[in-house]
Image 1 (cartoon, rainbow, N blue to C red):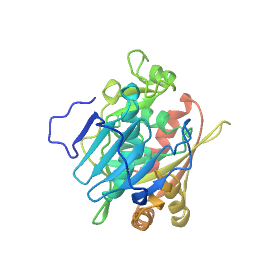
Image 2: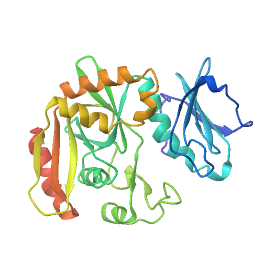
Image 3: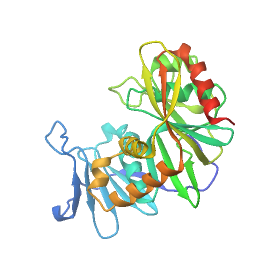
Image 4: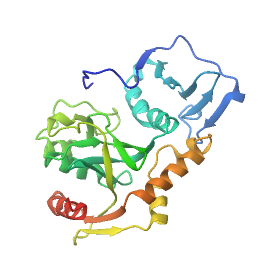
Length: 293
């Protein structure tokens, strides 16, 4: 885990579960349609008098309060799932509850401003963001870019200082894939500290652009195209986290208002470019030219 030399913004603790919590089902807010191998909903959300509890059956319960998050680990053999759940569903929900808009995308700092790179799961955001980091542009966030509306600015908050790379990507950007832990035992991606090949941003940065990535198999030019505000809003909604959970709570309307404000305030553009490491320098040139700093 990355070390910190300052006070925490949000205390997190993980403890052995004292036992399986029982809930009044009338307090259940959400249960995913997707089932685990035991036929149970894979994620459930409950609310009691002073907290919300996100349950991952047979793995852990996460107790969310405004001032803290506590994980009660049900099965120590799957402890590796704590970080996956925390930095995904749990923190995504906590950010929404705290008034932020978490976008499924990486973000890098260019001359003090934030450029977001959003894409679907195989859209190339990890490769492109890692290439910017290795080229000397600080990483702001790797997978969840948390946007904050502050008066007239849209800020991107700094995220956890690690990136998820395949062994091939790690060899290309870092020089080796050795010694980095797997994100999940069943998948090939590795958790790589940013310090291995670049640096993390010093703090939040005002968002200058949001790029929706379209990586293309066929060779061709790099193109940057403006997306109209209405379509931009749809793209932002499409790249938010845990949409079904948010839609089941009182957060749906506030989220839509924030995303609409972001779509009106920040240029959202489609970035089309050919696949392959050899195309990355041209993508950098196109992005820097578009930012025009």
